[in-house]
Amino acid sequence: MYFEIIGEIEDMEVIAKGPSVRERARLAAQFGWGRWRKLKGRATIRLESGATCRVELHWYEAHGIGRRKLKIKRFLE
Image 1: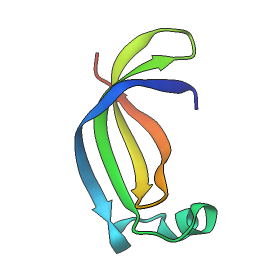
Image 2: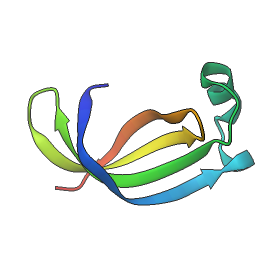
Image 3: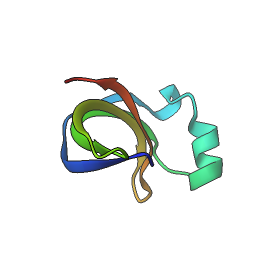
Image 4: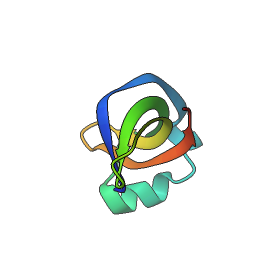
């Protein structure tokens, strides 16, 4: 990962779940079968350069597997 999450992820919201998750088969093959959901939220992060900023994150999550494939979608500040 090229960033580190500082603190908590806030304003978490489910974008897709179940068959609506387009990458469900690939996620299952890579990480295991589970109830995959795509979520978004806001967090403060530290980049590799040492700069801190507020961003919107998107990721996949399944019970018993945890968060996978976190990515920055937008810089908020």
